[in-house]
Structures are given as structure tokens and as C-alpha cells.
Length: 171
Image 1: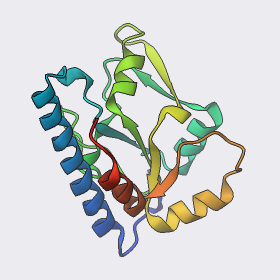
Image 2: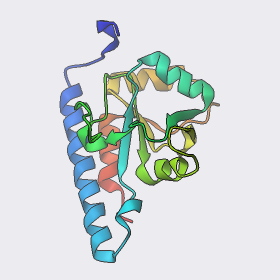
Image 3: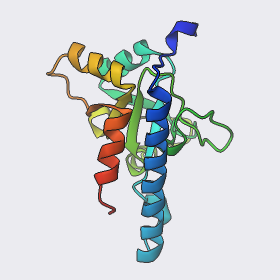
């Protein structure tokens, strides 16, 4: 991947840190709520992310197909609270090079994976994602250049998603 494929601005790191902190606090509240209410921990609606490591072309391919294609048994998503941190065998990190991060409720992925066998492909419609997140400067441009008639989740900056999560009720 060429070096120019990574996008960063002076405020990117600070905005990512705020989003990671906010997502981590939100997911902890969800787990605490699940324990108190006796919910099955498998079905906690925590927010996870898939980084678009292939750059803008990766995002455009997903938009054109209208869905994210994954393979059951392969780690595609990581914790939003570990955004930008390298994934390891536990699948903790969600890669972020500034070209977009797909954010989704974890249960949406589990439901799709459960419809196929190990090693088989599953698809998640783009409209099932919670958000596509970019550095603020990139989000502004992407919102302007994408046609308005394409069904997409909200295009947001790190800051906008952090503010939305802060207001999101625990269910």
C-alpha cells in the first residue's frame, strides 16, 4: 500500500482518542447493564468497526456493491474502542488509515455470520451499518461528492460519532 494512502490531519489523533474513549465507556455501560438485567452477553449491542485498509477504492467497492462481504471465521471487525490499534490474534484492533471505518452493532454481524457455515461468505447490507467514519476534513468532502440517492449509513467525522454515542441510550 503506498505511503500516501494514509490520511491524517493535526486534529485526527485527538478526535480518534475521544471516539475510542467514548466508545469504550459506552460498551462498558452496555456490559454492566447486561449483567444487571441477566442478558446473554453474546447479544450485547456493542459497537464494532471495520477499517477500510484498501483506501478509497475499498470504500467505493463496498458502496457500489451495496454490502460488506465477510467470511465466517475470519476476523473482519475489531472494537471501536481500539480504533487504529493493530489487531492481534484476539482481534482487538480496528484498522484505520483515515479512508473510512465502517461502524456497526455487533449483533448485526453475528446474525449474518450465523446464516452461513465456517469459511463461507456472508453479506451485511451497507444500510445496516451504524455509520461510516472519517477524519472531519475527509467526511466533509465525502458527503459532498457522493450522490445523495445512494442508500448509505450516516457519513460522520470522529467527533460527530463520539457526540452521537454520548447521547445514545443504553438498551
